[in-house]
Image 1: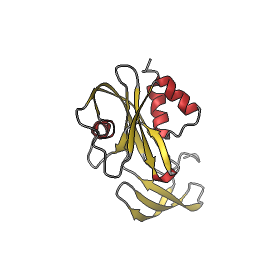
Image 2: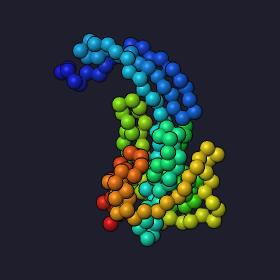
Image 3: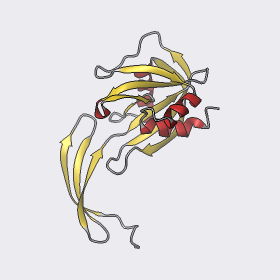
Image 4: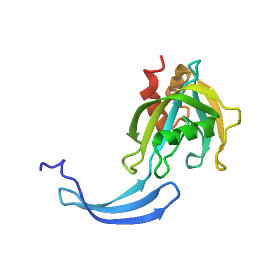
Amino acid sequence: MPLGRELPQLLKQRLFYKGRKFNFEVNRLRLPNKAEGEWECIRHPGGALAVPVTAEGKLILVRQYRFAVQGRILEFPAGTVEANEDPLETVQREIEEETGYRAQKWEKLGEFFLAPGYSDEIIYAFLARDLEKLDKPPAQDEDEDIETVFFTPEELEKAILEGEPIDAKSISSFLLARHLLV
């Protein structure tokens, strides 16, 4: 098999941390060229994200505090896929919890790796339409501090290009949905 197609050989796998949402492991590998080394990896069950669009063509995002970046960033509603849960179920729950809206029409936009250099997390992105405002306020998790915000696609594109803090999964999902938002 030509170099570049053969997969590395796993020599040793160590679980360093088992967490609520992800695990952290260190793996010793032998590469096809016989060199050996260690690679750290975050094992994550995946996430699901909604690009919610109102009847007026506005996008619903949330602005929330994220400890890792010590600030508030814009994101589309999203959440971690729980054990034995379909990603569509995840995002249907999350959009209601985070925004107080329910979508009647769902379309899969695609899926992508979030940061494959150090994690196996996959994001499942969906377009959410035919939104209905729920009678009750959003049922945010105890550890969430979320504000619902509305953008036109043009306003969101401008915010992205001007460097407003927006996470990569939201930018990627917006790109996947952009051609459907006209």
